[in-house]
Image (cartoon, rainbow, N blue to C red; front, top):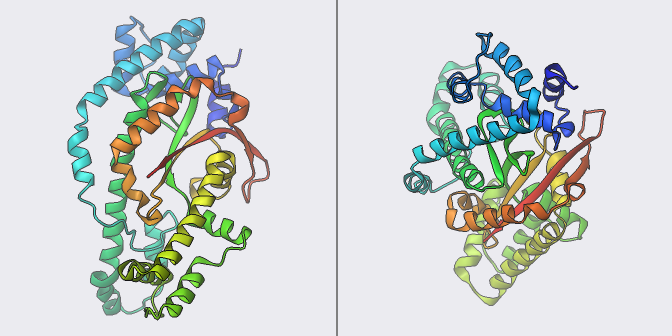
Length: 368
């Protein structure tokens, strides 16, 4: 039989494919989920189990080996315990108040390009650039404080909105939560482990598809049309700011020419969206292959892709729109039992990694 060390090695090396629907592998993951001081103590008490080990690491090994004596019954016991614990966590969360807090964030602006690391950004942009102490001090009010504030506020918003979204998933009968954190697993759907990734239709993906379809570069197109419409804009501004200024001025003018320009751009994006909705594996593969190097993972992933078709830049606001999220997510989970494992498989490669990867994945689109 595949023992504790076997599953531990697979998990640590991120070779997670074998965990899919293997009852012993699932038992290992579920047991790992409750290996927290209070959780494991409660599980042992409820099930009248006594362990010799005193450290969590030893208790994990010992408990797993005991549970392996009857894998089916043990999985059932763990499922019941985990669901009961999850219900306790849900009761502690004041959803309405948390949603209200999230609506206080009016602008989603990171304040800089961190590439997954604020400290590296600050070191490369300020620490290693400025020899003068006084110049460095002068950067705080205008730049550094803004960058840190943006990072903290956006991270706060992402953290708590993600918890709300996870609770929608965890409330469904087909979903078994992980009550303790497990790397690469947020929950199980019909006994398939998944990591949840909440994201948007990526700007880089849209840019790539526009090029494939021979659409003009969006900013180039906007600048050209702005000049035709005699709309002035700050040519020295950042590309994102130039795009925003032109679009807002075209919205304000609201004549037939400007409406046609904005409608053209919207329809091109809707066409790109429709293609990935019809074949989600295209986007899922792209998301795996274009993830950040520092956060690379080959685990099974459920992507929740949020799209505001009126303004893709405002798609972040949908993370707090539970009235829109809940029915879409629950409907997906209701129908998950009809999906075939083979249809969820995706093969991908990652730059710098010699071996190809296989994972189970799917995309849930929430479109406004």
